[in-house]
Length: 142
Image 1 (cartoon, helix red, strand yellow):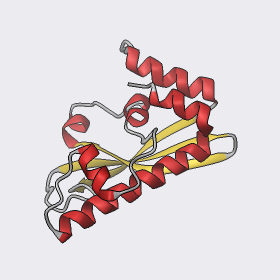
Image 2 (cartoon, helix red, strand yellow):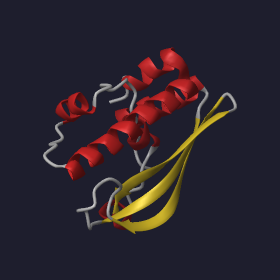
Image 3 (cartoon, helix red, strand yellow):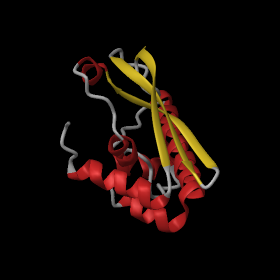
């Protein structure tokens, strides 16, 4: 049996203590990555479901084909550590600066605006699922 890392232990403890169930199901292999029309790499797409107190938040999760080919599957830590656990800047330009995006065309602005919208929506959905106290604990998973 593989040893559980400290990071994975943080995720398992968070899920247990918050009463959250996390399921990760593989959908298949896709070429490219959402919001990046220049990406032609293969990725494995998963469907993640978080259930807590009769509330559900589900979303796609992408991992590299390399990981899949080498029998490395995403863990609850991988998923939780990637979630938007704090509010992002309301302004798209401020968001771009905070996360290091370059906006130099209408296309790049639209791409960053889409990513920004998804981050805002994810944060709101997670806040609804977990509430303020658990969101603070989610942010501590690193």
